[in-house]
Length: 222
Image 1: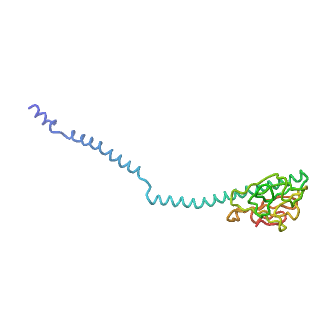
Image 2 (image 1 turned 180 degrees about the vertical axis):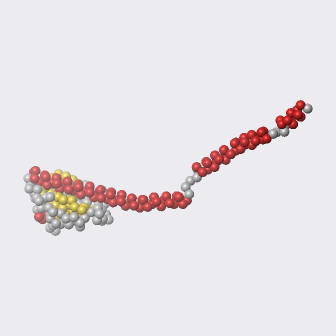
Image 3 (image 1 turned 30 degrees about the horizontal axis):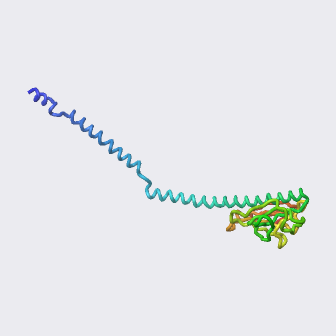
């Protein structure tokens, strides 16, 4: 009787205060997992196809702009280095001519020991004191050697007098009229934006020019 009364009083009847806590426990044990799964799925979602295509398109545009500019910078840097090498060697030859009181020649050379008759200087050049002090001699005491270009750049000499392929400074540092001319450096294929010229005047002045510029004598870099 005591148990029945006790049951009827609320313990055996399972009042609402018992039911709701159980539901809350079940909800708390399931709902966070569902929410965690949803959050996890949202965080692990990758790019959509449209986002990927858009990103690749933007990257392609930047590359199309940047790569040609980068190549142009590299080409221009290479040409400038080659021009500066010849510029320094010509200045050196002029200085040695005045210091030694002898003729000093700068000529194209593929073997590093004697002058060649080729118009292209891309195969290298030498600075030398020619035999017997004559500028027409193709052998002598070599003072400096420039090796063949590692690039595909071109270097051509256009003399004021046909048939001349070298420069010669006399003991005063001047260049005979027959040796005057202009060097033209360019990339392969030719590009006017990277073209450089090197002009030598009769008094031995050496000048570096860009496309369209003229030297002190009025000759234009073309």
